[in-house]
Length: 351
Length: 162
Length: 124
Image (cartoon, rainbow over all chains, first blue to last red; front, top):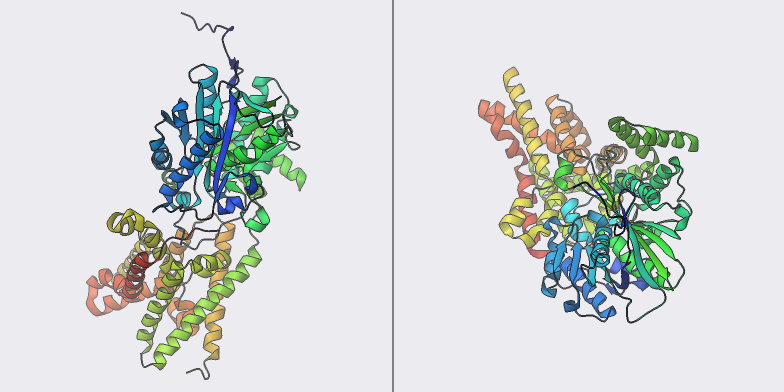
């Protein structure tokens, strides 16, 4: 049998993209974060802010699990659903073997896909969740991720007590969790415009040989550039199609590099580019150097700030592009580079 | 300056050979990544490091005044500085000083002590044996290994030639 | 105790500070991690000690040369040398740990006790 694609039902678009026939609805989004995030520029939009990021638990990892559990429960309550109503849960975090996720969502008893995309995980989760819904494989899914400054520092850098000086290019891991509920039907409670995922572009790993773990923005920028290039070509649109092109956590350094790389390819996103890492913290007063990072950076920024702009009809079309660096402490010690990846999710407001 | 940056990024995007492209990208990134202000950091390191060393000198003089000979006074000074470093690490103060002082807190023996205390406190959650025991030297281990190794090699050379 | 000693304190401050300022250049201008920098310092101290440069420097500068990790490296070699002079070949194996015993024991013991008392603190 030859590789004949039935063009009638094919939702494949271009090389790496999908255009949904039944674009899933984002019927709720939730965000739970720590004190520093709560004190950030859109801290007031975050659903729950916790002063003590240990959340009364014994370990940082358990605290991160609790953040994720709270984010899912909040999303359910905002969507007026129970955990039994959710067909599948797609989630991941930065820790080895995804322990924050597994222990966090275990009690919810929702069939679960564990994902690893580093800081691009929310993009991966939303993409796969949207595929499940559009393909009629599920009616309701939740996509959620978490990260925690303390657990990430312990795993990737140094114990909290160690006196090290962060360079300007280093980023600050966001503490918290953000999630969305996707559905094949419009939500019952409508606050403002209806939000839908119109399509996705799946990223490929792009590695330009950066070995500096204190400069992740530079490591991930080429991946973001590649996904944007492919996305615009696959969909046959210009960057101006979007009110905002929102990268995950390239930070100040990575964002400048991305704009440069794209300009060289005659793609100009300087007017409508936004980066969650730059937005989530106030660089000056919060001393966060290159910006925020971690799975929760894009997730919380989307679930609190971006979704509000869409609901309030300030923006109509955004490309959410969470970015991740797929290295580990071992790969770094063994002298390897930091491969980057970026997933694109097309989110539009209608009505 | 802006034109040079444009030229460098062009070398990255248009380079077909991945190895050379990566080299060009690394060069470009080094150029565009803003660095911390070196003079400011050097001055801070100078003050913090100098102060810690002066504190050490005060302790040595004090112990000698209390009757110890010079070698014993230096040993007691080491114990005192290590104690203070661990103490302030526990309260989260040493890290705050390190953020400002950089090398000024890394270079003195107090930096070594901080690098032992920090994992000890952090890894207690993973147990005494597999948490603290295994990880206590996770930062300082190399200092001990290469310190002993280099003095061993130099000692061997000294032994052979004397 | 304090009379006539102000020169010593000044030397300790200036020399210690200068060593730290130089190392700051390494930290800022290269991507070297702190662990690697500490190793470089200790080995440099040992080598300079073996070359006979560090000891007279330490005698002049006092704690300004003794407190930094380079001083630790010098102390390690000094210990090995003295052990070899006293006990011959076996001194090569004995001297290093003997010289570093006080510092390492203090760090281990106090840190372990600290783990009983203190909890890790979130950064802000």
